[in-house]
Image 1 (cartoon, rainbow over the protein chains, first blue to last red):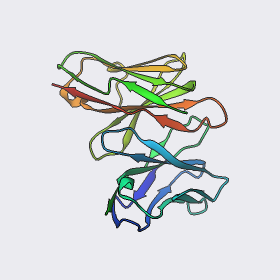
Image 2: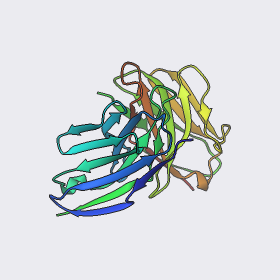
Image 3: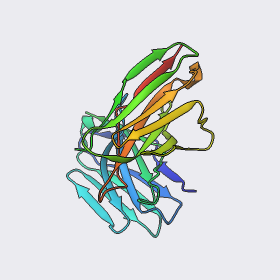
Image 4: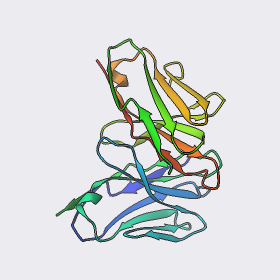
Length: 113
Length: 117
């Protein structure tokens, strides 16, 4: 079955710097890749997603890139702010074929003021 | 849009009792709802997938007689933890996937913290 590896497990950056989190997946049939932000004690919040027919997607300070050949995708956060501090999860699924999400292990991002 | 609620947000119960958690999609119809369990500092672990009007599909290792799931309508799914024990203490989160073009997008509820004494 699908396996998603996420790195790094923790990431500390200075406010204003960029942060990059990387994920690799094993199943080449996966075609949907969302990213979630989870604050302490809360449920995950969808922040951006990308489908396999697109190589890059951007939403203000957040961007996601997908390399289908290498089976990896990355989250890029620019101009980080303290409120970006949270745990970020990547996930992969086969879209409409069942829709089960396979999650990465999570990255705890800390943005220091 | 795409708001999912859970109730209660936290619950404390005695060992041996049953606890019901509700998951509602507030502004869309959810053809599929998922139930996850999350331990501290860990990722989300899928417990089961439920489709409206049919029996839930449980992941390997999840006891279906202990974690009863009902998806009676397109906006409501419930998870009942039967005969709860301290090891069932965890953060339970539901997600809902809607109808329409973005049927692969899952929206998560705020979670329910269960503590079994």
